[in-house]
Length: 201
Image (cartoon, rainbow, N blue to C red):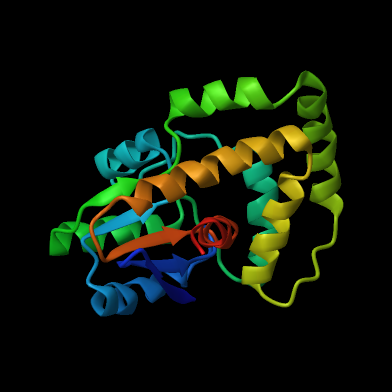
């Protein structure tokens, strides 16, 4: 779904897509044509964007984490899944065609590691391992992939440290897009999109 906010006279469009679900990329063309963004922001770090643009999306050599594998398996209930997420490749393709800058809005690797070590305790890291085992066997009964994506991510960020880390990421993304020229488009996971909109409203 697409949402348009007016933030201090700036037009910020939000397009929330379910990561890795084939078909979500089909939302992009109409939204980009409607918004006419000066830039497209993605909820990934700079290194991820450089890798995608430099390797044409070939991530065969990148081993997914256990969390990613469990997510993909659960998500496949709603349709075909792919890694990397098809919407990322489509954004890059459209941006190249139309000359629109694509910007990584999330923390870069160094900033993420610094925040992780500052926020997440050893106990929470241990609990995360147990939590992933539970999520692997948990039955997610959401009626659609959008609500599944929201619930999956909400479950991942329940502990205080991980929630603090999440809040830092969302604040960083919001700060990145607040000062840019208008209009801009943020293409993100639903959990990210709802978080950023909550800070800007």
